[in-house]
Amino acid sequence: MFTLPEEFAIIATHFAPLAGDAALNLSDDAAIFTPPANRELVISADAIVETVHFLPTDPPDLVARKLLRVNLSDLAAMGATPLSYLLTLSVPRDTPQSWFAAFAAGLAADQAEFNIHLIGGDTTSTPGPISLTATILGHVAPGTALRRSGAVAGDGLWVTGTIGDAALGLLALRGAIADETGHLAGRYHVPRPRLGLALHGIAHAGMDISDGLLQDTAHLARAQNLAAEIEAERVPLSVAARGADRLQTCLTGGDDYELLVAVPPQQESALKRECERCGIPITRIGRFLPGPLEIRVLDGQGRPHPFAARGWSHF
Image 1 (spheres, rainbow, N blue to C red):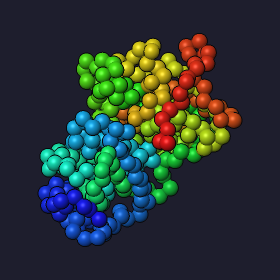
Image 2: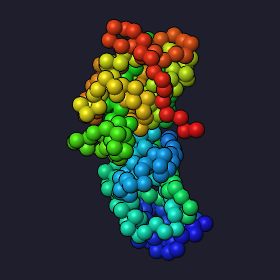
Image 3: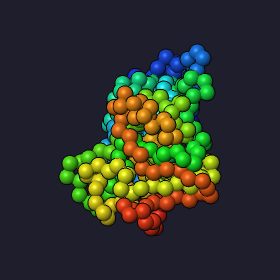
Image 4: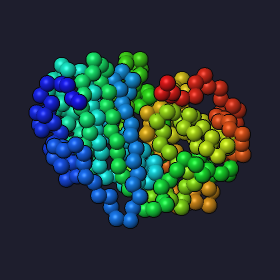
């Protein structure tokens, strides 16, 4: 299926060194995979496309790391432990060997950090743009995966880390805003999947933030036909992201890959202890209310904040 020249040399040189035992040295038609005993598999796939999810000028190693991390974030949202991944690359015929070498180096760096291995995939040519897909495999104890459905009225709305850095980072890379420290661009290039949190029995529901805080809050609320209030002044922003004119970008821009969770008041202390154990900052930014579905953003005086956009859409 691969039509680029030197297909097998590319695989042998750049990707076979990344392969785990299940991959059969990437020389067979499929991997043979044995999941851990007495665990449920958690499987997710995400694609990133040049000019849509990354810039043509982005370094290939950072593109590779972003691809893995947006998929790892899906596992983090469900409380899963990563195992391995499959990779599909569609690149132009004239893609140089140096691009593959840098891309593979980025994969290798994050494989080492997150203890995962490549087990297979596919490569093909395209007239462009570059399109990359990873399918990630993880595992959880039976019945413990955290899902989007389950929030109830009265739950607090909590978020990890800081919001808006990646969306502002894209603006910085395009020259629209300043980024003296490089913090914003760094958050755009290299998300931080919040792996390791054991939130079963603490949170009623959760997901990662990819489409923007407002949009993804609506996803949690819609699953249970709830409304939600977000207190704008409580939303955690990094020093680099602060500014009155940046609030809409921060709340709607997407690419945060932080976790958004619904937690009942009686479990707030447990939530804080678990996040402290993992060294992950967590902030209460609002609450869920009886439906119908509506997401309200309030300013410091409790007045509604108007927003022209609600978040990212894939179509």
